[in-house]
Image (tube, rainbow, N blue to C red):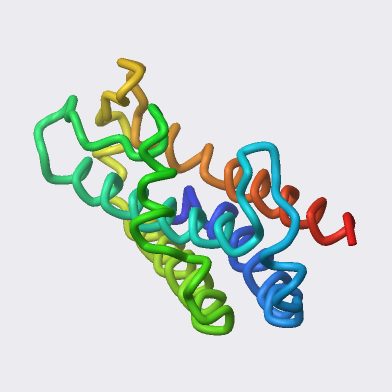
Length: 159
């Protein structure tokens, strides 16, 4: 959908710029330092994969289910930490994880470019009981994406 091309274009630029940067990080850098949530770079990248996956599912469900929908909310209530632990991103090969991050987010770009515009007002009810429209969810995704890239950048600078 043309309305979101600027978002997908921005995300694609970030992905291209960050892919090489991430691939070049040492094992020590990606596992040693932790952010305020006690996550290292591998775990932050894993969380970004989970975010792309969950948001892809939300975008799809919001286009065919009756609105409003209660879709599982992995980001609130600490559930995203369970996702990280269960998937054990610390043991995942770093080069494979970077490729997973890249392709999960590129696929999300593709999904938002193909949204049915008549569904943009459909509502997802988050675990916090907040009502979030499909449009608002998509418009907020780059903020969340860049927040985590900034966290990674800060952890890289610590060394």
